[in-house]
Image (cartoon, rainbow, N blue to C red):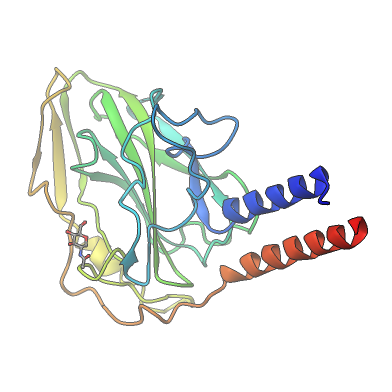
Length: 278
Ligand SMILES: *[C@@H]1O[C@H](CO)[C@@H](O)[C@H](O)[C@H]1NC(C)=O
């Protein structure tokens, strides 16, 4: 018979497996992230034990931007102009990559990118490190409102992945006004969009020119907080046709190693326990 302790160890291993495979935004809490300091999921939603898994891999999209569409009931409040000390849990840093941070005032229809880090984003972060900090500053002129805050990451090494987590924040700023940034660049998402090939070594093309080509966008929030408008075209994120489309399948499988390790140790412990109890 299996002892309870063995089952508990196995369960912990399985949780560790899903929690430490990739990377996720953990401060502010990404939607339905499983951690004691994060709020429970909103009514009707479940904890997501895979907030650190990519939403797309090799041009195959499995989850939408943000992963989840129902916001947390309680929002983290930030003042306009305040730097958010965003935090990330690292399963595998994939050599860093390109990060965009964006705000949406209209329930994830229109995004304005407020900060971008090319190539070095999460570079050098160590497997198992938690709450790796990156400061992201809310623009000084950002109007007040309930806002979705998104982190979007294209990795440098590995399967051509795209990561997206969203946090629910409230910005305290001016009552109505506008915020300007650039449009969201969506790559590594699905075959409609381009794939940025791996850029492991200094000097490898990392296609930052696609990021440089993002158009400016201004989001206007009425003082009621309810009506918004934006310029230019709010409906589609930039999708440059020049994006390279090759090497979708050339990624290495580095993230599978911890998986194999955990599965094999789990089986070893189960096996040892069966022997012991027979
Ligand atoms: C890619 O995603 C976009 C946006 O969700 C969607 O409109 C399009 O149909 C998708 N393309 C494919 C090939 O799945």
